[in-house]
Image: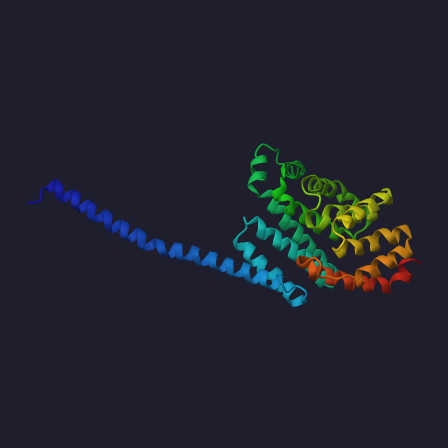
Length: 294
């Protein structure tokens, strides 16, 4: 015979089991929703990278940026994906988009994504806990504590801003100089050869475009980038476009661009699309040679 106390316990146990059943029966929808979200994000990311591999075609370059951006919106803490998105914005702005205003928007969006990837990284978040809520102090501290893992975020932040500033007035470029130097000197200290001598190439371009800087500094940085990665053609094109024109080196300008056009763009397979676009850019610069050296 069941006692009253046992009956009460059994009743409670029954309600508890029913409650667990209801609770767990509700969980699959949440798990399923989360699972679908992850599947969607992974699908978008996969599509983005597939289009990225075909970025020599303008449509694929744009689709790569679109899909990677959508994936990143679902994976905002994924550093590798953030860098891919920032680079995709840079590529589209640099090589695909013809409209100057649209180019500017793409460069700025690419810069912001890389910057936020840096600021939201666990290492930087921890370091910023005791930093005053001053934007300059936050940025300076984030750059100071960045390690080698965060080099891509630093680089693509500065690279996007740097390309945005190329077409801007001297005063605008000067306003950003200190921060850009701080970012790229950190990259230089952590990984000077990142992205095919990227920091050297960056400073070569920057110092050719700023007043009051010895032009020899620009040449020195360009030479270091070319020595390290002679088959990354963008460095040669930038040196011709900004250093040789400013120095009045018409013969070197012409020879460097002819060398780019004659080069094998496949020697660095990972950046073959970039090299192909740089060869086209070299041809356009040669067409403008007379006006550039008037």
